[in-house]
Amino acid sequence: MKGYDLLDLAVRNLRQSKLRNGLTTVGISVGVASLVAMLSLGVGLQQLATKRLAGSGMFDTVFVTSKQDFRDFNRDEDRKDQNPENAPVLDEPARLKMTHLPYVTEVEPEIRVMGEIVYNGQTHFGFVTGLPMSARENEAFDSLQGKFFSRSDAEEVILLKDFAKELEPANPSSLIGKEVTLRYGERQPLAADSDTVGRPTMSEGQNSGSDTQAPDSYGFSVVRKMQPLKVIGIVDEEPYGGMRTVSRGRIFLPVDLSEKLNMAQFTDMRSSLRGGGKNYQTLTVRVKDPAKVEQVQDAIKQMGFRTFSILDATKSLRRFFTVLDLFLGIFGSLALAVATLAIINTLVMAVLERRREIGVMKAIGASDGDVKKLFFAEAGAMGFFGGLLGIGLGFAIGKAINLGTGIYLRNHKLPAEAVWILPPWLIGGAIVFSILVSLIAGLYPASRAAKLDPVQTLKYE
Image (cartoon, rainbow, N blue to C red; front, side, top):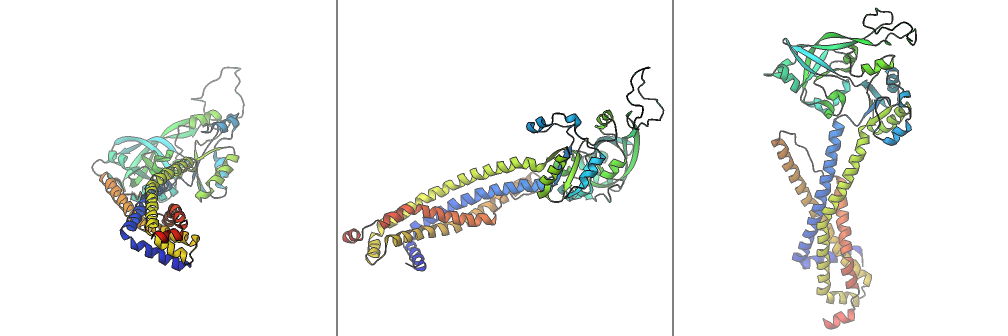
């Protein structure tokens, strides 16, 4: 029997019992719709989480610290570093070396200090952080009031909205274009040949170590300084989603200006105890392509430093969503399992009702294989049309989910987000899966129909 004739006969047989076959097809469509809705919800949630992380500017960033300062989250790695005190320090030469690594676009320090903003004779305290020019791409600045820094060392400041309300409660936006004064502590090294006032004295005969000390070997002094700044912007929320040290601030300066001001940081005491020049607590290395982050991490680790990237954390996130998709697929398939029983019931009833037809077909030369193919074609046709209808129904359910979620988020003064996404691969996969399940359900009815004896069927009919 030719394929076209087989399909034509199968469709014609399905039309004979429109109500029963139609209800079976609708049952399949409900199963497919639940499966599509569940899996699409899992895909949407995963893409939403990925989008939020990518928009935070974290996927292309590697955080670098010295092994002298921080212990690793992986205890096995810690055991390998028996002498962390001998690890290299995170200083300017190390930073310069990282800038020359392949795929690295910038290497900036994480600067966060306590400062004061003087405005209208009033003093307001807040953390001051330095932002690189690349921070303009962060989604937090999409709703920026005013403008971003004109250059990396401009004497300009961007304020967090909550802090701006402290300066100007009535109208925070009026601060844009005005001048404020930043009061901070400047770190000044003590020269070896300077006056000894303020240095610890040594009793006669006490070992002073070396006679040739570097200018910063004795430590440093902190001198209060004042820097006028022009307010050029106000940001509603912390950049980088508050996930970086520099984002947890209220006063944002260009990073080069922050370095030029040489503001005293919390880690300066540790640096002075080690001797030598200034060290960094954390460096952020930005990579050209997120796919190259792991390669850059390996290169920095070979330099003897500790690294961390959000990709390390997303390994657990991807594992979570894989398990979530699995469970959503299982629950979504339950309705399809019920539809499978409906297919078996429909086709078994068709076998009983069409015994004479099957007997005539076999009497005129149809083989057992032809009879099986006919029932498989009928099952596959129900699966195909049920799959198409199920995708349409699942799409409607998803749109309703997005609409309801959008209304809920807007009522809570949050931007609407699409939590349900139907990827193209799921459309094709749902149809194929529907047909496959229908064919499996048709195994028993097709086998039963093929085993009918034409003599017996015609005799009793």
